[in-house]
Image (cartoon, rainbow, N blue to C red; front, side, top):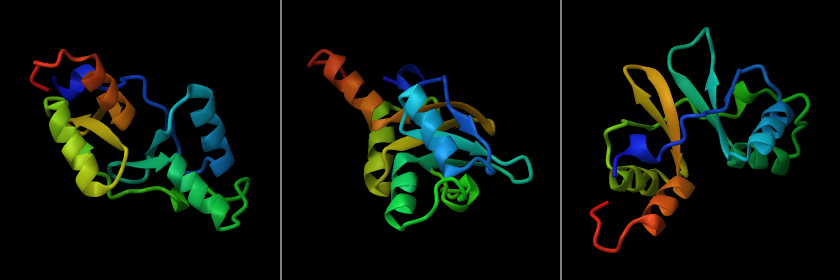
Length: 130
């Protein structure tokens, strides 16, 4: 199965000036563990995850003051929509992360998470090649 078939195309996008609380509230409302961060003054996209918010809280930072720009990952590993789900899982395993932004021609197409991959593998017939 290809990433484009397993990914979520309804991606939460936040800006670099959103507070951590705002980002966390939006992620909670949407039931997602990450958001794509788009900075119009920068090339590419970043990713904000629930882990980033947790680290900030654990460090005693004020989530109503701290901005997403200071707590996200700009050095994002992207997946291509034609990658196999197995390739996405390998990239996540190597990098130690749970979400991949799916890009095609510098356009965000979606997000694939460990949850998406597990769902595909659990639903797949035992003999299917994933």
